[in-house]
Image (cartoon, rainbow, N blue to C red):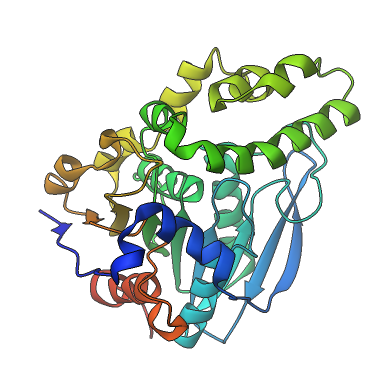
Length: 327
């Protein structure tokens, strides 16, 4: 019954989920030093991988969230912490998120694990690591859980486990939460970059018949899914996309030690995104609900040195629950 009770207890202002969500991206100054490797995909596109190496036998693959990148503060802070723990890292910039538009009309979505599979196979075929750990945040966490679950019978023995943070594992119900007034500011931030990217794709690919009027009026993820995700990726409807992309159905098939951390005050998540039952019935899937933390926040106080609970929790799960080959 691997359901963890949490010891995360921030100071008073950080017990507000909205405050905790916004504090990390706005005020933390985390940066990581990377060496970029561009790899060519099977479909004649590219993916940019940002490595930060310390000479380890273990590499951690980190996957950012919606419209993030390897420069996202939660990625950079964990890269630095994992490096200090003696682990190599590689940050996977999802297509179109590395600072340069990708070559195809299609980019990424919450369930596009074929790209995760491609990157993992690239690491397996081109490096000699004895251990690979996958860590994903938000959308990247959904990809992490879905990949480890759907690959359970064929996954490489070198994949030793995974960690996912702030994950909308049930996309349909999570989108209902995101559409509420409480998330209006966050939605406007997401939509600013997402709409611009869709407009750029329509300009580059005239065969993609975008209804720009509907795009400008879009206020919900479902609107963008109707306009882009469904036609470009071949789903029948937004509901079809939610069902096929959500990681929740795959939690019961996970066969590698894998931790999900979701905060109770994460305004992006629905009650369906707290899988106590799945963890209680699993030998390998662990779940930890914190009372506070917001979305990809988990900040403790105004003192930067104290704002590393999430980084320490991730490192502790690796040490205590993931068996690494260090021979």
